Length: 121
Image (cartoon, rainbow, N blue to C red; front, top):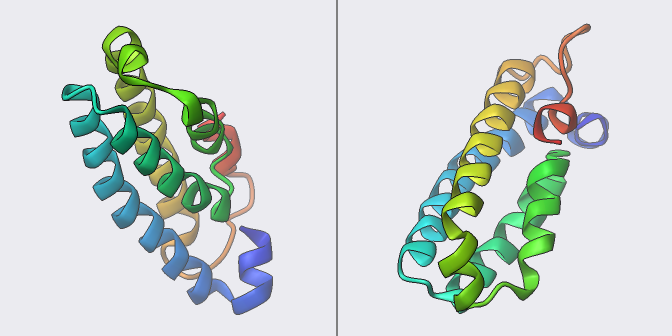
């Protein structure tokens, strides 16, 4: 996030956080739907879409989950899908809250607060 602030300022970082939260929520719904239908191709596609979004804001835990799921197939979803969805939902909610608290106002990092990567790891 500090790189984003350096690159474009606090308002730019806040815009990126807002995009992550809104795009991430949509992608999360698509991932959950693909798990429900055991559609491995859509699951992998959506995880692939979410991965760079997470990387942009330093959401390491979400990034790593998506990376792990590159090879997930229909059978993986049948066996582990509910756990995937639970982990992703919890991590996304925590990460989004931390990011919005720290950056959504456009004021940059607030000293002494948790980092997004800590919340998402």
